[in-house]
Image (cartoon, rainbow, N blue to C red; front, side, top):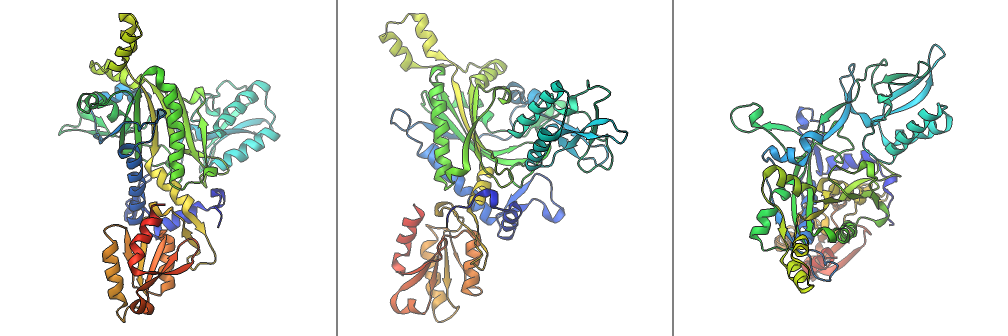
Length: 541
């Protein structure tokens, strides 16, 4: 069966399967849940760990081959979620990690200001008005823009500004100060009326105001300003804080990387689209330190290496793309940035962010050197020796061999990776009792094999138990003797289990078992002694 375009997949159906089969549950569900937080069930935890372990293996334990034909050098780290609050002042998060937001005074709902769009409408008194309405989805944005572009007539200057703002929003940028809510200089003829998404009357939305995305907490017994701290909004800063420790203790030399997997927390104004944008999430980040003049080469290397890695998970190339950031959407620390985007069902036919590869320059280390008063410059002995061989002056050698490294940062969301693999795997098939199966690449499937006695008698359970005990230390297996074989296959299809082995009446006679392939549903007989080898070959593909 050919790959199915995510645009044709139902997000509601994927979410329902995740709940039904134990991939993802709403957090605190028995108390009504809590917006923006999710719990990962048994299968979801296994899937997430499989992705994480593959990233760690391919990044730290067996890193890729660099441009010179040699493996690159990357070490691992696990830094604290709570750091000295001065860290976030130095990084710019305390002063600049904000989303403009608006509040609806009637419904008490809060919205991101970049989710507001404007169109012209006829007022009840015959005068035109510009109506600002809270935006619900990307699809509504596309429809709104199409309608606005074809039918609305605005003064040229205002039309040009609104067109620019709306087009930028459709392209996925964050927030623009010239969005409709900030138009206060329109003439009497061009009145602005603002509607909330669920409000019963206009004029209920406030002006945009800044909203810091970091969660605050307090350290120690006294809750006052001196004990205030933050849950980290990214794992990257813990790496920068330990850059000097790694250089001093691990005998690394430029260029090298420090990798980390861990939880981050952002008090998102509007968490949405299942686990795509949540308030607690996991990241897989690597900071690649290099000499400033080598940074363009490494930026290009990591950009393509990270795309290759996502494809290695079984993600279709047609569902992935690069999108370079425009100058006006770059983060304050970034010289250039490219997103690896995926075609999610809720963005299709467009794409949404999966991973960012950013050229952070020397911003972070410079900031921490300034604020901490600790020297974070790197002495490059190889460049010093080369400079001496080249006959450079002492000043030239100093300039070449002593520098604050530039950083290339491939930063991906582990939990977004889970969503991508769930979406890729979700495959409707009306010919099956389950009506759907999860087509995971076998290596990443939460359960690698199902082991079934055809009936729960005649010695079959004992043979199945022996096979299970022999496989479980090497493969994630599930022994299941309950209900009909068809229902057991259906359960395994929804869990994404690539192979099921059935012990039947012939097994006791000829020592063979039936192996069923999840994707094709084809069955064949193999010797029971060959099951471990069979799985090793198939799972390693």
